Image 1 (spheres, rainbow, N blue to C red):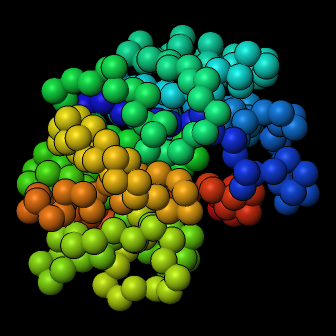
Image 2 (image 1 turned 180 degrees about the vertical axis):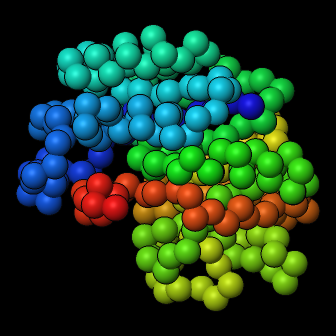
Length: 255
C-alpha cells in the first residue's frame, strides 16, 4: 500500500495570532511563518506525530510546498529528521499557487503503482489501535473497492458519507447546509484498493468542474464511481483525533 499525504497549501484555519492565544501555556515551538504540519509539540512536529501514531511501514509520499521548504528553517529540519527515520519515503515539492486537496494529491501521480492507496491529512493523530484495526478491516472484514474512515460528528464543516439500507455509501456530501440522516462524518482518511481508480475518478471530477466553494476536495471523488456500482463502505473509527483548528489541538493536548 502507498500512503499519500498532501500538505502544501496555506493553513488558514491556523492563523498564528489566533492560535497563539488559544495555545498559550503549552510547550509548542512555533514561529509565525511555520506551516501547521511543522509546528513542534513537545519537540515533535505534527506531521511526525501523524506518521508515528499511524505506525504503518508502507511507502509514504509527502506533497510539500516548495516555498515552505525554501523559506522556513524549521520545515527543513523536520524533513531531515523524517528522512533519517523512514526508509521508504518520497518528498514531492510543488510550486503551484492554488492548492486544493484533490489536485494536490494528483502531484503524486508520477508514483502510481498497482498497490492500494491511502490518502490522509497531515493534521490528525491516531491511537495505537487504529492501524491494526484498519488493516484487519481492509484485509478480512470488507470486500469494498473504496473505504471512507468516518467518526461521530454533526458539525457541518465536515464531509458526510450517506448510507443506504445495506450500509453502503450512496452519496458523499461536502459541507452540507444541514445534517443529513443516516450519514457519518469523514475523518479525511480515504482508501482505494487500486491507485488507478483514484486517478481515473479524480480526473473525471475535475474535468466536470465539480467543486465545493470553488475547491476540489477528496471526498466527492467517491460520487463519481457510485453510479458505476462499485462497492463503497465506511470504517467507523473512534481512534482518530482530528486537529483541524487551534481549539482542536488544545482539546487533544488536554486529554
